Structures are given as C-alpha cells and as structure tokens.
Length: 327
Image (cartoon, rainbow, N blue to C red):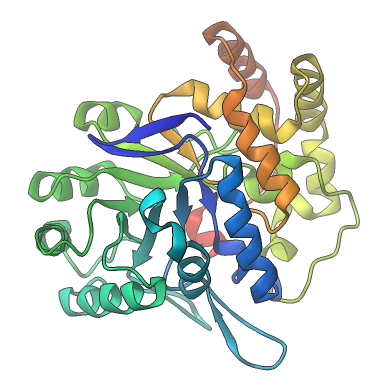
C-alpha cells in the first residue's frame, strides 16, 4: 500500500485500521482469537497504521471485559517495528456519557497502563481523546513533551480538537496530527487552513459514516444490544430513504471506476488532501482488503470537484458528532 506522512515525519499506510469495533461500540466483542488473526492478516494488505484507545472496551457474554489495547498489542507484538500504533488517553465511559480527565497524573498512569497492555516500550502516536475543559491545552502539551523526551511516545495528537486549542497546544509541543470525524457525509474542512499552516496531519475517523457509505445495510436492519448504530438516524427507515440518493450517486461512480462505494468514498477523501489518512474499521477480513485497495484508486481534481458539487446538492441523514457516538 502507498504511504502518507503525518506531521513532519510519521509515515503510515495511506489507509489505517481503526480497531475500535473489535471490542467496543458494535455489539458483543469479537471472538478474541478470530479478531487477533484478522489484525495479523491485515498486514498482508499493506496496513502499517493501527488505531486503538484505552477506553475501547466491551463486555463479553460471560461478564469478562475485552480490552482493545490488549488485543492490538497481542496481534502486533511480533511485528512491532513494522507498524505504527496509535492509542488515546483522557476519556472514560459512564452511564451518564463521557468523562474527560487529562490531569498530568492521569496521563502518566494511562501511558504506563497502555504500554503494558500493548506489550511495547513506546507508542508511535498518543492522542488526547477529547479536550478536557478543566485542563489548559498548554499543560497537556507540556506532559506530551516530557513523554516524548522520555521515549514513551514518539508523536502526539488531539482528537475532536478546535483551532484555538490546537494552536495553544502546538505552541508548546508540536502536534503531529488531529483525529476528527470526516467523510462524504461529514465534510468538516474548516481546520484545513490551520493544519496546512502548522503542518499537522488529519486522521479521519468514521470515514465511511459508521458503515453508511458501504451500502452494506438495508432498511429493517437490526443490531445487537450495545451497538451504537441502533440509535443512529441513518439506520432508521427515514434515514435510509434520505440517503438513497447519495448511495445511488456513489454506485454510479463506483461502477465507472470498477470499484465499490466504500473505495470511492475513501479515494475521494485521500484525493482532497495529501495529509488525510482515513482509518475505517471492520471485523471482516474481506472489508479490510477492500478498504486497503482504495489507496490504489486515483481521482483527478476535476473529479473531486464534480463529486463535491453533487454532494452539495444531496441531503443526507446521520449522527456525526464525535460525542454523539461516544467514540
């Protein structure tokens, strides 16, 4: 697979693998051994960039907890120097929603636990998972600088950031990339100018709009208990109807390129900016292979403009706020 560079020098596969869904947010966690094999086999498709987080956990039928970092670390331990691992700190789930905690002492505890679970001495990319309104950006960035000096992390980033927060943090310790939602159904490009000014990359989570842009779901689809898609508007009868025009348009594009809807969606994103790296996730090996091949599809500037013009005219339905899906 082709590669891309985030920030100054973090080189990763053009498409990364979002590992959250193996244990978190999409129903009962995957069978551990099967999930491990899937991650291992994804290396054969050219993936070198793997995304996880300390809070990506799920309850198994027997009541035990599946920890995403443990799974990812176990699957990649024999390939550690071939891959780049990203994980996150600062978010915990509660019955009342997300709790943020980016106090320096919490960050210190989190990195030590993540290193242990990932079976590694360092993390290639360490994200602040969500901004903590109680802790200044400069203080968080200061801790990141210390962790870089200590060799425990090599780069750092911010997920769901604002321009103001990014600028404050970057002035203290250069930020390698942000991780925000971005897709054909969430064309949030307001940060592009500041990213280019500061030379910061953009890792796009939910690049296929939580599966909507795969055309793999039909009206009447049901989801397991605990699957976040069960309360997303795009999976209601009305949501399906509102998104039909977009899916139909993408299908015609895909047929013209000998590709799938998902591949066109990812190729469009990568053609927008050279510093965008999508991290779609799936539990299915065939989907991972399909997503990887999106890096081989080229769209011209004219084609991207034509697609954007069409998207401007199409109404869609979906939940797109990061906090809304409790990522």
